[in-house]
Length: 184
Image (cartoon, rainbow, N blue to C red; front, side):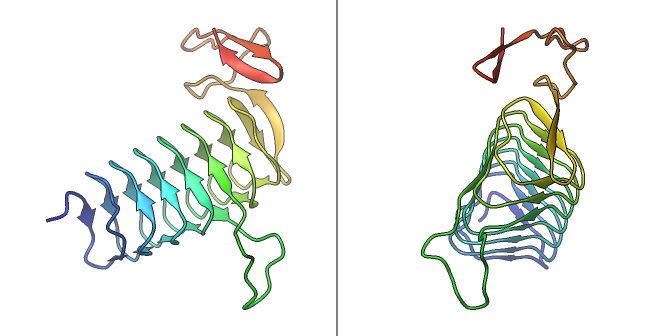
């Protein structure tokens, strides 16, 4: 007996699904995909073989996750987010290895964003809806636009930091060290 939920209209070929994960209708999970515990995989999703998804991840409807994508714990992926895995795609011509895309812990990706292959989105980063991510995104930053551009530093709680790198909501203070935001 599985310790996770699969809707009767979903196709789940993988045996590596964590406890309390929910997989909803019209989702298709290929045999070598790995999905952690307490995830919510919404309707109309597709997860390819060389994909690893951590714990407590939400994947909203209409998201296809291709080979080469790693999604770490507590990530939110909004509806219709697009991932790519090949910078020079041709029909029936496959690279020897797909580019690796990594979403670090606590990343949030807004609806209808596109994540170009080979990039890493750092911990607690937030990508605004409809954005095109074409390069690595540092931790604790907010990016949006086409192409996505840096807009602000953000707290682990998701709020923008003020000019002194202080969160006025939860009162956490940060410092910038070698272009990396570090909580004090």
